[in-house]
Length: 201
Ligand code: TYD
Image 1: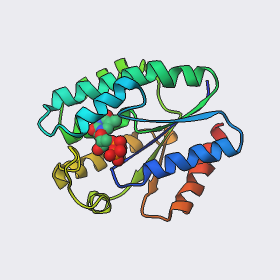
Image 2: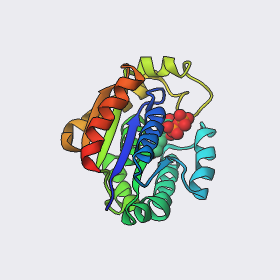
Image 3: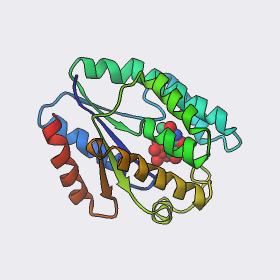
Image 4: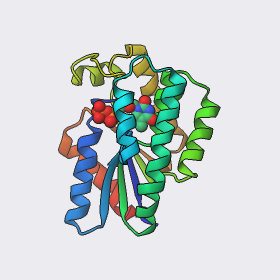
């Protein structure tokens, strides 16, 4: 199986930029690699993404179910086949997002969130998760404050819970998480990420 590298963090943390940067670096060095993102990455996932981003009145349980549906399809159609054929997968968000946003942000039953993640992924865990950590205030300010987007419109407290949930997931499994201060320069971050990813390839 090839490596599966996931980027996590609040919106505004710069994770999508770093995920793209890692993909470019891998390809320059002739590794077979693909980049995907959640929610999305499949036709079903992309339609669910539109619903999720523009439906502020969705019940938290419905929201959870849609993220899980998108992930189930992504793992089956994209992630699992790629890893099995030796392609390194870089993902912008994965199961830890659901623990952070739906479990802690929306305060849904954590056991249920873990069970659904397990069902969606079939137990497929990232080789490494890179957490681009920022205080919630800073991340929101980078995105231009609370906006029309479902999650950007959530109160500051929600984003604080999400950040703490990420940090505690990382603390529970330090061998599989890399936590970086996302306020560092972009190039410095990519240097640290590459230093940790390279030995895994
Ligand atoms: P993202 O694509 O990172 O946002 P954008 O492209 O707008 O920068 O993710 C969309 C939102 O979905 C983000 O605010 C986090 C949220 N999300 C969850 O709440 N749970 C999940 O399981 C996932 C994957 C994302």
